[in-house]
Length: 400
Image 1 (cartoon, one colour):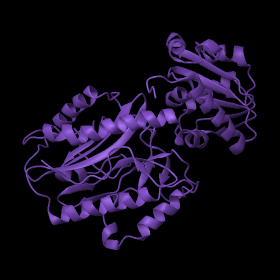
Image 2 (cartoon, helix red, strand yellow; image 1 turned 120 degrees about the vertical axis):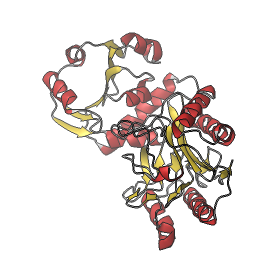
Image 3 (cartoon, rainbow, N blue to C red; image 1 turned 135 degrees about the vertical axis):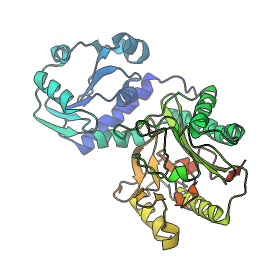
Image 4 (cartoon, one colour; image 1 turned 90 degrees about the horizontal axis):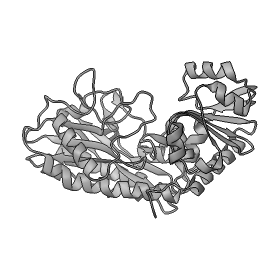
C-alpha cells in the first residue's frame, strides 16, 4: 500500500463514519465545528489555521485563514469546491449563514476566546461536545492508517535494537543522548515531532533517563519520570546526569510517520549485569504486557481487561506498578494514532467494547527505589484473536 498518498476515498469514508456516529450518539445535531488541526488533517488531509464545518446533510465547508493556498495544494478535496479563503468568521457566515442550529464543538480544544468570537457571528439553538465521537471514529484505524503505523513500528523497533546501544558510552549526558537519538530517528524517516492530545503537553522525542532519574516526578501522565533539563524545560534529559557503569537506561519514545505514531519503551543496562531485583520486576512487566495483549480481542471491554489483569496480581507485585510512590498511573494501555495519547484506554471507566483495528500502547512499568524505572511498552493492534504487536514485541533488558 502507498502510505505516502492520502486518498479522497479514505477521507470520504472517515467523514461518513463520523456522520454515522454523530447520528447515533447525538441525533439532534445540525452542525459540527472542528478547529483542531489534527482533526482537520484527519478529515481533509491538510492542517491549517482554519475551521471545518460538517453539516448533518453531508455538506462540507473548510474555511482556511492561513494558508488557503496550501490547503488547496494538499487536500484531496481541493477540486470539490469545499475549501474557501477566510480572513474572519464573517467570511464563513457569508457562505453558510448565521444560524447553525444544534451545534457540536471540540470542547476539549476550543478556547473560550474562540467560542466568543464564533458567537459574535453565528447563532446556535444548543451546543454540545463532539470530542468523544471523534475519539471513537479515530480509534478504529483504516487499512491505510494501519499500514503507516506498521511501518513506523517496524522502524521504531530497529531503532531501539540497533541504534541506542551504539550511542551509549560512559560520560554521555541524557540530553546529548536525546540529541544523538533524534538525529538517528530523522535519518530513519521520523517525522520530527510527536503529537499529544493532553493539554499543554511538551515532550520532545520522549523520556530518556539514566538510573534513578527515571523516578523523578513530572507533570506528564505516564509511568516514567525524568529530571529534564531544568524547571523551565522539564523534558528531554539532563545535561548534568551522565551515564556511569551499572546505570539503567530508560528510553520511552514515539516514532512518527505521515502523522501517525508508534510507541515503544526499551530498557538497557550499561556496563553491568542486572540485579535479580531488576530482572524480576522487568519480567513481571513483560508478563503483564503479554496478559493484556492476549485480551485485546474484538468485543472485549477495556475496564474488564484492566480489572482481570490487576486482580491477578499480588500486593507485592502491585507495589510501584505504573510509576513510583504516589505518582502512579491508573491505566495499563492507551490508544494511539495521530496522537500518542488517544482513546480508548485500558482502565476503569472505559466500557465500550473494543473494535478490530484499534491500536494500543501497552506499557506496564515498575519503579525500583535507588535504581530506576523498569518495564516495557509496545504497540498492538486489536484482532479477533488478540493483540498483534507492530513494534517487535516484549523485550528483555539489553546489556551494553
